[in-house]
Image (cartoon, rainbow, N blue to C red; front, side, top):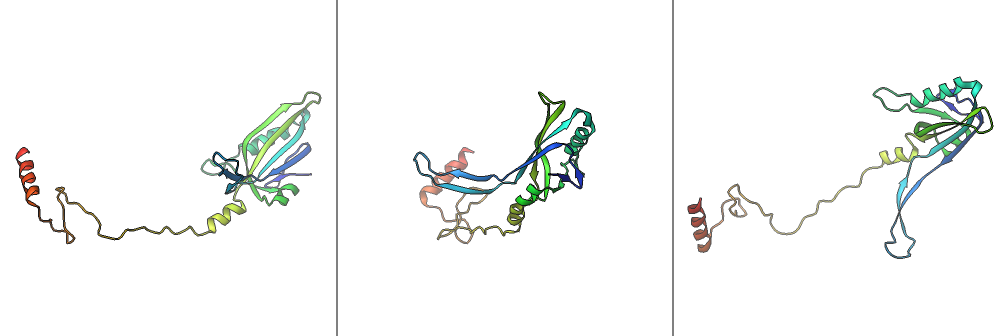
Length: 180
């Protein structure tokens, strides 16, 4: 099996690609044994690639590391066009390196065991979500008149004019002004 990233072959022996789709759900059972869950959407698919690179083919590991560290304009990770049978079966067309790239020496062979993860970019679910119109928010209102205040803190009537004060309120107003 082969793996091409932007037309560049990832070189190594025993190349294996494992694909995964994470379906996000939230437990709604609370403190009960209920099995209800809330669907929270499909997360981007990921491709986990494992391969063996002999020590004699050191340049293949150097090339893979340069692919992993490539950035686009603005410092974002580079997005690669992916060509692989497993990726095609899962519908992954574009991906970028994510999580980590690891290379460890094999215990018996003179080679590195390399593993890395590619995460789908611009997934079908993401494109559908962007196209979907947002739910309109209904403005809620209650019957009656809105309560408004004036700069002085006094009450106003429905026409915006100061409301008539009761006798007790007039006394309190005079007292308040005297204390100032």
